[in-house]
Image 1 (cartoon, rainbow, N blue to C red):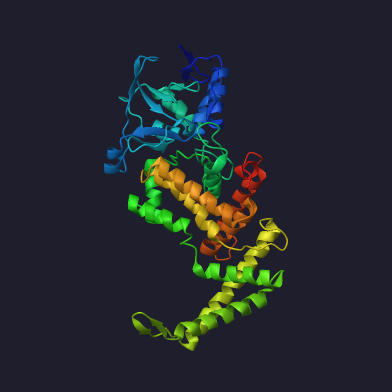
Image 2 (tube, rainbow, N blue to C red):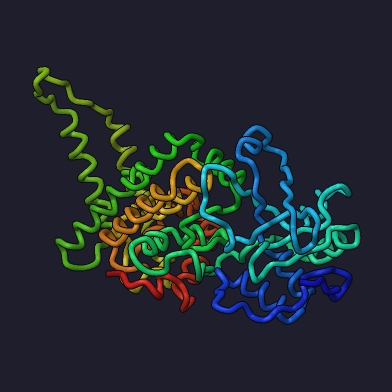
Length: 424
């Protein structure tokens, strides 16, 4: 296949006939293919500049040199030269132990390229959307010009991105992945990428260690089990929510906040009194745990303040359409289940688990969501309340606004899994 001069000096493969039977994995590859068929090289370069570009790396090298990257050129029969291959997200193979793929952007390659590096950068080699980008001084200047307006390469945040090939869109695995969609839609990742590379091996590994303290396979296993058991959600949050749920069933209607506060205070006092009583076991008599009056009243005040926070969040949720009129959150375990779905994929991207383990954990998260909630909207409100109770401090700031934007994308986009996947 010959090379054709691009609009402003770049050389790319010449226009080709449509590939018979080929379906682009996602909108990114479809856009590249269509631009290539049209011969619209400026559009092709723009799409490449906005895309996450993944480059194969030796895992041992990356682990030993966390701040460096190494090129691994290959011989191209098309150009009769050495070339460097990069892939867009939909074209990546399933993660294996080695090699790994790190994520870059076109501007980074323009800066990192040296005169002795290969003369071409090849995007998605061997595919119908392949593009051969000259890497000489003029070519790299072209990369820079197309990259300059791009603030954040990659998929747009708070929009639903779907793998049309290579990712499940129905069934238990898809449902489990949709349970983690809050995280992935917010971060600009494909919601249904089970074979997940995320932001690349190095980035995913750093993120897990920084935010979760997870750096080994054993860490991942422990954290995955903890999230699937809803072990990270505050037991105090769950206590007050379950108490209100019980009261609502008893009274067959809404629960007044003052009544809820008083009932919670009574339960806390009764539990404290019961805990102070000696108990008899096979080892003999065990003395109960006593608390001072000041400690007890501190516990009561804390629980009552929490109830006020929850009530105010729910009022805002109703005003913003997260909850229906008169609706309330029954449990915030959703926050752990959604993160469990995310943790399953993060562990795979960081090579702490296998694809089979990821799939099993994703399916488990989906089942827990389906059993404990009535709808995607019901699940989402519970997830957001848990997130806000942990992070937001009633500021209704970024932690709330971003979750609300993600919720609206997932409930409003006709292509969203929350619109296409049945609940039962």
